[in-house]
Image (cartoon, rainbow over all chains, first blue to last red; front, side, top):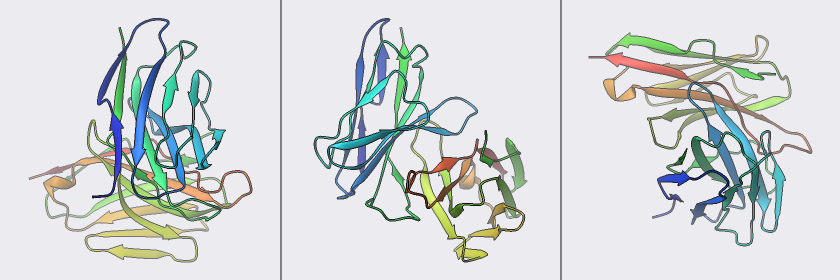
Length: 115
Length: 115
C-alpha cells in the first residue's frame, strides 16, 4: 500500500528547542517537498529535493533545515531560529527528475505547537 | 507577490446544485494547473489537473476549465454533495530551469454544501 507517512501527528516544541518532523514515502518518487500551512493561507514551500543528496530552499526556508540521505526519507528540522513555528506542516512527493507538469501527492501532515 | 489567487474565501451551495470555484494567476509561464481538496487536519488530496494545451478536463463530477487569455481557471462540481465540503486549493507550475516541479498555491476556498 504505497503512500506518504508523516510522524508524529502532533508535536510540541519548547522555546529554544530544535524538533524534527519525519516524512517517508514508498512511492519510489525522486522529488520531495515540505510546505507550511497557516490559518487562512495557502501552502508555502519551505524546502524541496529533486534527488537524493540534493535539496534547495523554497520561499520560506529561514529557520528550517533538511537532509535527503535516502530516496524514501526527507526529514525537516525546525530550529530555534524559527520564531513562529506554530503551523501545520505538509510533506509531498512527485515522480521528479526534470519532468514538468508534475502532480504532487501529500502526506497527512504534522501539527507543530509551541509550549 | 501573490501569483495564484483565489479571491473567494468561502462558498456555500445547496446539495445537488453546481459549485464553481475560481482561481486567477498572473504568471504567463505557468503551464500546468491542479486542484486539491483538503479536510481539516489532513493533507491535500489531488482532484484534477489541466495542461495549458487544453481548455477543459473532466473527471466524473469534476470539470476544470482554463482560460489562458484571462489567466483564469475554474473548478465545477456537479452535482455537489455534502461530502464535497472542504477547502479547495488551486495550484500552478511552470517550466523553467530553476523551479521545475514547484507548485504555487492559492489561499484556498472553503466550500460548504448544505443538505
